[in-house]
Amino acid sequence: MNEKKLTSLLNHLNCSHRDIEIEASEIVTTDGVSKAAALPDDCNEDRVGPLCAGVFCFARGVAKAFGMGEVEQIILTAGKSSALINLTDEQTLLAMKIKSHNDIERLSQAGKCVTEEIGHAMA
Image 1 (cartoon, rainbow, N blue to C red):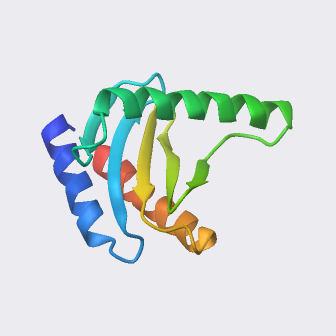
Image 2 (image 1 turned 60 degrees about the vertical axis):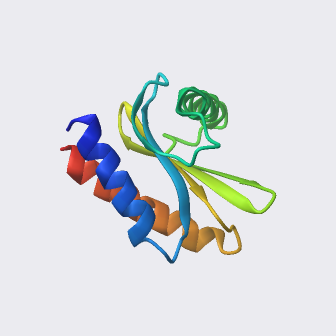
Image 3 (image 1 turned 30 degrees about the vertical axis):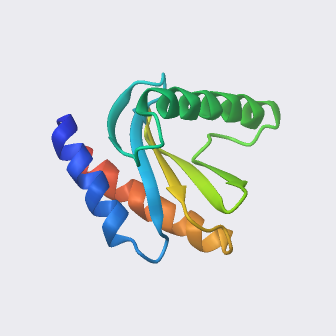
């Protein structure tokens, strides 16, 4: 799927999942290359992607050290918002900035649903 279609899908997801208030999203490879982004002006696509890939790589190492199995999702909470990084396939991540982190379980489930939608669209 080309970048324009992926970006359109991200914009649609950002608007259609009002219950989880997605403020920003990016599809990035596990080595940090952006495939598509729907980010506000104050987010740098060239910075967000590599950072998310780095966090994923770090989490993979932690999971391996603890014998936890494969990383599926990373939740980062800070200040008044959260970030979810989901593995969509072996080489692709979906990173999302979520406005609130009051109900982590609900956010986690919603993040998995969005990831499945991206995975189906990319297949």
